[in-house]
Length: 248
Image 1 (cartoon, one colour):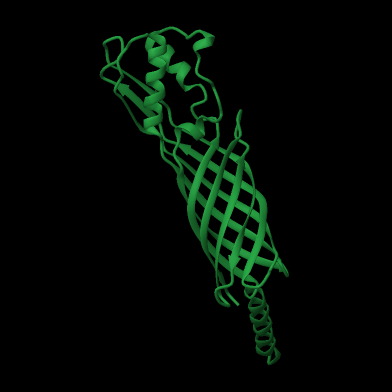
Image 2 (spheres, rainbow, N blue to C red; image 1 turned 90 degrees about the vertical axis):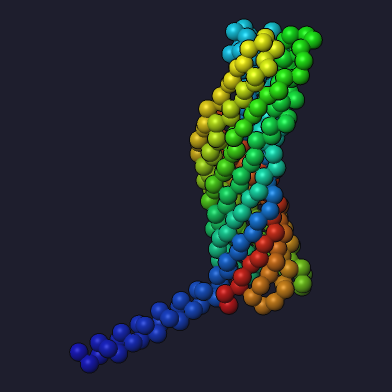
């Protein structure tokens, strides 16, 4: 029985030493910046469906607006993204990152109004500019990713490459478009329903980290994101600046 307290004490010391060595390899990072939409399934068939809804007819193929995954880039604005995570040093110049990120895109109402007016003038020549109202429609993307980070220390500046994959959830608010001065003389409204989906993701990019002190390292980075969403992949770019906190 006298040996039990000694054994517990020895075990506690070993755990403490092991935990101390483990935390010396851990870093915390956080950052924020801009996110640029590129491609997705949002609004791919929006205009043909809306014209058919309003006029009750389907446009001739020559008049059909392009159904394109790039509508995500056209009809959603550059947004904001924030992120934070942990970085574990596997070996010198190579580490593993576990990160959590959120990106938010606002709906580009002005571009939708412009294109809708062009389309209505094509359908019915000589109509006046229509005063459309388009609202809501923001797209939010939540993601978690596990990445490898390879650094090349050069002194004060440390360039690095990062790549990996994870999982993301996309939420699109409904888009509500209406007009009180419709070309046919009657009001109309059209609603794109909300959407939610999830997908496996891949990402890759690089950045530069600055050794400001022993424990604080500012960084800037650019990352390309690919989400394997159904029918059309979702792609976007993030550019952020932030800080890495070394726990040594």
